[in-house]
Length: 316
Image 1 (cartoon, helix red, strand yellow):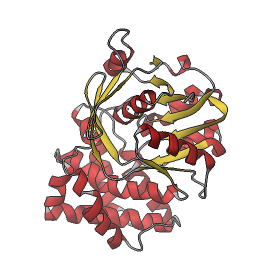
Image 2 (cartoon, rainbow, N blue to C red):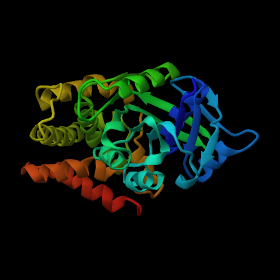
Image 3 (spheres, rainbow, N blue to C red):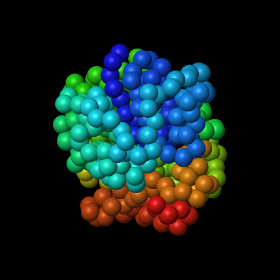
Image 4 (cartoon, rainbow, N blue to C red):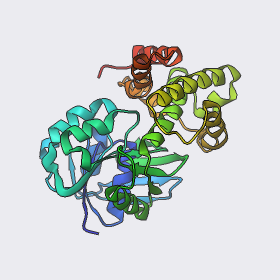
């Protein structure tokens, strides 16, 4: 493979994807910061090591940058894996020239609103969204553990329908070991991820619980049910063609299929609060609240979680 890829945002998800793509033979540059990036860029024993449920992998990216302005130009793909609140500043600093003429930018992020920010810089026709439900954690600088995978990664164009770019990059990622499919309805898939994140991440972060402990508590399940019901109503008001005919049907999928493989997972939002960092709550519960207010829908449970997490979050 001779594709050139920039992974912009080298947290756990970005690091795993960068490692597997580089191991598969793609020319991969990474953009990040801090001790983790410095360990990756180390000249002698640098690179990214991945372990966990996907086995052991190691690869050395071609370049590691801590400044968007230092990245190259003409990438076949820019994979944006930074925190949602960093998206606008990051892609603006990169600029449209980072993509090759037929290149694509793909958001690998939580929440809603990210792909629109990519489209404002790279163009709507070249900006794709991905639904990611695998998780990991940086165990030490340069090392990442994949801890959970609920479903394969999905890539699609937000306008819907078959997209050759989504099919191309889904095939590349899948061949590299990141289970991935193209979808003709990525917006519905992204909303499904919002239901999942809005129910689990804020409560887990505030209480310090893994996902399994949340599900074991009857009172917390009632809170999660309410959060899901509100988000589902907002998605319906947005005329999203969901695969579940009701919120109750989604909850059956949530508790029966998505939660069991992820019971030990501690969300990135919990890890952010523990480290005094800002969180992605605005892109998750915040988007449910913002859009719910537009449609006149009661989103009080999401509003309470939004307020509580923001009160605990570090400065952006």
